[in-house]
Image (cartoon, rainbow, N blue to C red; front, side, top):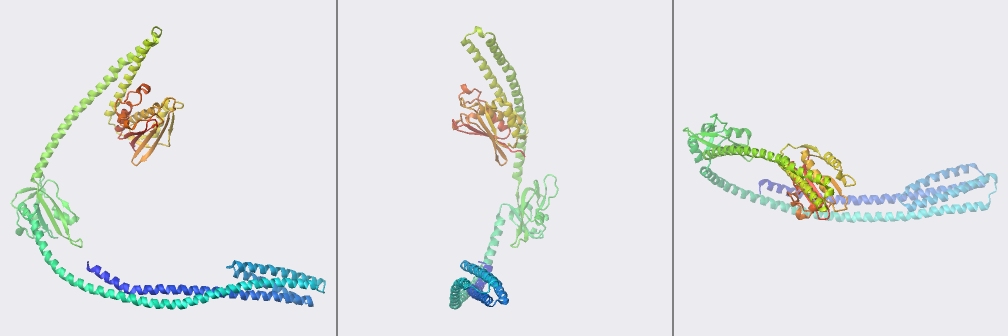
Length: 611
């Protein structure tokens, strides 16, 4: 554990001894403040009820005054009573509206206030009627007075209901105020007592911990003083051990100080340079370690100077020779690395090198072998090119000399069928038909072999191709891919890829033709074409509803002359998918299939995306 971590622990303990009591006091103050705020909240609503009751009584008094003014006018006919009556009505309306706004927090009181307003309006409307009658008829009907009294009793009843509800609410709020006063008084006192005890306990524990940390720090300081003394002794021992190790190492080792002067040499470096450690001590390194280019004899830059300049490990250039003190030359290989202190300051450079005489001899031997190998490769390439020329000539012979007799056989067989049909029986016609079909099949086989051979030889440069355009043109040009012969769906727009148009056309025409061909009798071929994005690759899928392929045949179908699905019914030479694979490989792609017997097939071709 370091001194910094001990100091950090001590400071943390000291902060805890101060901050923890402050945190407890702060939290207790927050709790008391929340209780006081809640008490003020309850007192506010209790006072609110008091104001509501005052305004209610004032409003009720106004209504009673308006009743007195109405009666005074009925008895005396004095117009001043009418003006006072109207003033009371207006004031009452304002007061009741304000009263309704004050009790918006209580839906029941809002309803009671609306009942008062309704009863008040009935009474004022009836009083206005009596005032109007008094103008026409000075004598007041006792029944009218009785009716007015009944309406006024209704108004007073509504006021009474409102008053009793608000009084009950005020008493409930006063009860909560008294309850909160008790909580604040007794709870606050309890919290203060608990706070005092807690702070005393926390402070006591923290200061005891602080005292323990202080004693521990003193012990650690004493232990470290002793450890430092032991470390100095160990350092001297390690220094001697490293000195012995460097002297006994098989490579030459030279150490230079920041000024580039030699401060250490092991025995191997003394042997190669011809300098002893005593003679070389504090000599400039270029004087002791002279190096030149083996071929040009030009002095090579001193690696130590390069290390000081670039602050990284550097190596010697090839063909470097060390010239010893007595003029002997040694082919060497070396590296130089900076020596850093704990603050990343360069303290010097260590140079490690070894005698590379055997390695140089081996390199010369390898160069001679490489030259011989290149000469043999060139000779074999010439031989291979001659073989390719001969193969091309043979391919021409097959395409011309072998196919000519086949075309003659086809032509003569067709001529006999057409000119001598009436002279031949059914067996003879059947023989001629079999001759013609065999010749046609052999001709197709020769063409497929030639196509396979051309694909094996082609090494053209790939270029960007519009896959969507090529697929749609193939579908357009082949009648067996049109309705009603087949239904072909191309999903979306296919991307651009890298390839050769001839090879890609061969692949797509074969796969689409197979998809339309290998279906069960009476089944309309349905073909779906789409692409998937595979990063830098594009995977083209061709799905059909054909007879399918057994999983055991997934690899065999791409071999030459392999037919796995009733050759008598579907025909073919067994070369189609072999040509497909060879063409796909020629454009740096891959091909495969997913299928089950009777469930159709999904062939895929993976190609490079055009850049």
